[in-house]
Image (cartoon, rainbow over all chains, first blue to last red; front, top):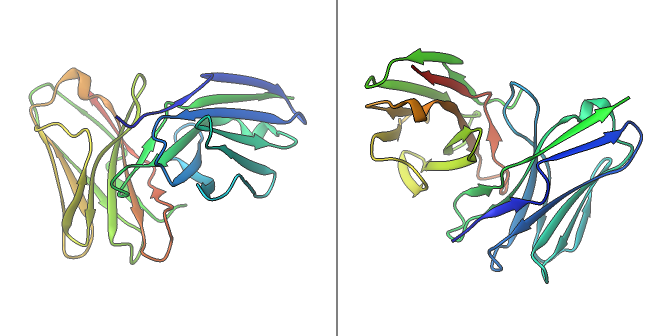
Length: 112
Length: 113
């Protein structure tokens, strides 16, 4: 079945460091992946997405890398700031192409 | 602000009861999704509607049902509530012009006691 998982439930970094959050997915036919950020008490917010025909996509301070060979997705955050503290979810589009299937999330804690 | 509005924000009810959660999608978005978020299960996809019609079902229990009305707002009905139904319920919407990105509301926090 479809499942998306993350390697580590928590990640602690110092302000200014680069953060890397990893995600493994199971459906090799998935063609679309997305990262969301969820702050305490709020709904998930879109960060960045990537299609399976790409290996890398960059946004503002964030980069998503996709390795289809090992079914691995990562989110890199440059110069991490305290405001980046949140739970980060990766998600893939389901086989029917109708919904997003989420992993369980990684809690990023940034200390100053 | 994502533009997706959910009510109520918090709800406490007893086991066996029934509740209705309401969602107003972003203006013009035809797709509405419902997700359940609990501590041990993460974000679980429940159901999707598109322009009033059910489009996809996920891990939605038979005690739960949803509908989307002509004005595109949606309701999630939870009945015969159990303690394990305590969770955060999110509504999300997507427009035909927004690609694959879905936009989440702030959620409705349900506590069953």
